[in-house]
Image 1 (cartoon, rainbow, N blue to C red):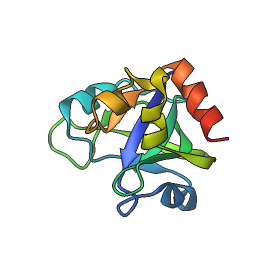
Image 2 (image 1 turned 60 degrees about the horizontal axis):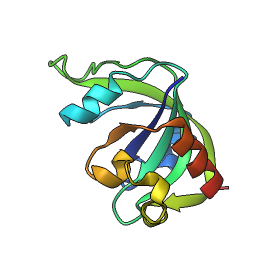
Image 3 (image 1 turned 135 degrees about the horizontal axis):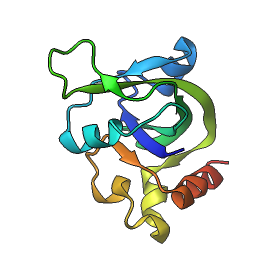
Length: 134
């Protein structure tokens, strides 16, 4: 099982929206590097949901309920989507500032490539974020 971080502007679609809906098709990814990562997502993979904009924090854990597949709303097979469901809200959201302050995250894509909307999360960093949010 792989672990990922996906970003969303909470005004567009928040973790609360995901909880309310019980699941969604995660779409709208157009960045080539993010699409490369998204296409690697498999059913059962875990995902951190990160709110962008003014919040800039990890707010919840989701699970992929499908592997990535071509976006049915697009005529271009380069665009991919994945179905996800909520798992649990992070008790104390983990801010980008807190992540940047921790030297363990120096090479993490969230710190290095701030505009990337889908990225892998190494197991060691996954556990660290969960501890920070407990």
